[in-house]
Image (cartoon, rainbow, N blue to C red; front, side, top):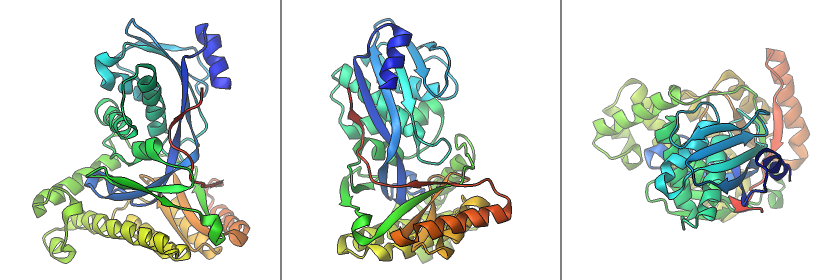
Length: 370
């Protein structure tokens, strides 16, 4: 394993443990997690692997195979930049339960594709440290600690979905998560049995959420909830009455969040009834809402969705935080080539950078590999 070999070459000894945590794709339930709502993600086959040995001197030594540089040496809680913030943040949240570590990181998540490489990095490191120090944290506790690292240390006000999907997912299943109660269950998600595939369309338009439009959307939702007198937009039960009391962007954000929660529940109902082909209409409706009400799409995402449907997809939508990243398309297996050709042709016609296509197969959550 190359991350172990790199660790050994850099630090002069083998790591004491090695953990892998996956990225995720969200089937439906976008921007609902920080509104205490419902989400339905699943882990993808790509992720982050962390080889780790504990230290006792308060020092963190970090290296990444993707950075191709010398190890970075930091103190716990020290100001850091770039990808190292996510690792240092995890150790900062663990506090005096750990005292430094030697860490080597290897990842194969397509960067900027909206598949949550940051959550995979946090969960891989937190899981390894939990293992090494026998901290007894459950996968959900690891997810919550990783989210807190991203919220409080990195400054990205994300919800719990990405970290929970990385920590809790099961192979061949989607993860239904109530982001308020943190109750969850896994739902069988075997598209191949129905002659279908879920295709990730990476627009290759990279995005950076921290401190920008993502934070603005969250603030708008919180403001709308205060005006409506509810703890979160998840608690809106009379949508028409709520919309009458709101104006402008807050009105639109509320419409998206409330209807998106309904779409999550409807999609789960279809899956459980075996009507898998019919979920495509819900994906389409989700995208239109994200485009028009939440306003987090982009020309490249919109074109990917439109061209995929023209090529024969049963449904498609942007996935992830938006402003770039990826779309997903529900595609009959015999139409995979025509969908890809349709998207590639549409991108070429508009002069966009060629997209990348990835098969989305539900994978296993965080686990020890050595």
